[in-house]
Length: 268
Image (cartoon, rainbow, N blue to C red; front, side, top):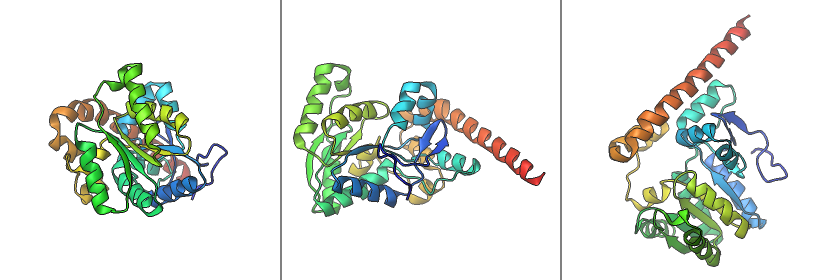
């Protein structure tokens, strides 16, 4: 496992797609969170994919929001491929959709309550039902699917913040999409310094069963995006095909050029 710096973040992060990523496996992330919670230390996890990296590349403030997280792990396979081409490989893809299960399993075993925040009406409740069905000892101290624009006003945001803080969770899964979920987590982090927060995108919807997830072989081969595109074309077509695909191709193309240059230098 990577060493840990004074701020609790891993030393030896990998620079890829403009963000700094911790070279950790999913099991190592769970171990890191468990050790921190046992010691009374909280933190936040960001799981960047191509879309998050594209946003971070355009906006220094968003890039800082990602890079200052306590753990940053690659959700997108293009990041794993790019890191490999750069000669700084990441051990595996670590997604919010997987962490919601592995960290809930940890929480059930250790008695740490979780809070689910995000998704359309009823989705967080359904996700809680699925998670507790799998882990009967899991304590869900709160579920909430706030109105889409709740965080556009101070009073609306404050109401949600107060409810989460009052529940005193050990782990909070926030599925509002980047950067909304991560900006909210940054505020919650100040009020609940002993809790861990995961900005998990669609993970709550996946856990609920409301949104189907790609088969394992598609996830492992980097084709999950195509499954999601076919499942939700109206919502994802522009994001995947117009915005993210060109960014991913430029990223991988640039990394391939660097790899070829390095291979040529090694031959000389």
